[in-house]
Length: 325
Image (tube, rainbow, N blue to C red; front, side, top):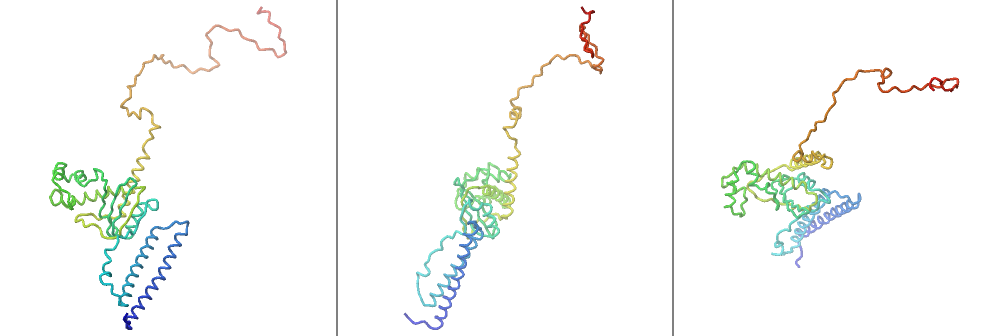
């Protein structure tokens, strides 16, 4: 082993000191993370945890840089081994389920942090949703289970930007390659760019509404670049969340305002479609004669005359009257 010159020794010593200092910072970070797991009955703030993990990864990268400097100072030559580390493994910066944090909260956090990357969501039924973020904005949403009305062609037809016949003719000749259908429609001059952007925005909003309503799902966000679609939208994450929440509230209000079928009378449930025609039976009615108001004391009795009973005398004399014998 060749002896190190003074400059190399200084550089190596400096690299070790920096790594030692960074190690102390890591000790403090680990202690803080452990306290957060033990405090408040384990109620960990996910944004704080994400920030701590990001800080941990940043320190790890710095450690690698200092280790490379140390190797260089010590004259260690790894040759091809040093540069053949291969592509960096995919780093998942956020992974979890709706049992810990809701999908809207995840999307809101990614928007507030101006994240760029891909959010993959799997529902409890196995549906796959992919949302792409660029600087916190939603630029693309796709699913493996689109509803017929959520297909781009169907949206263009619904918006009267394309006839159903022309769409059918195009799809019969279109061969799905790596060219997205929207770009192919624009290149075929069946729709212009502005109409295509309007349809793409409507598609993103409809799919986002489905994502917003997922109750039981798992998710994984990968930090990095997005797809390189030539034609795509850029929508505010905050506005998408507000619109989705408003739409969900309106739907819930409509369900709550609907009458309870168990409390409706039969004629309302039948809606009049099966009601038997009402039959009005004529009943004889006596002629109505208005009776004059009379005092009960002056009412005359027109039936057979009844014998009058005498009131007993006050002196107790109860001998029978001879005139009645």
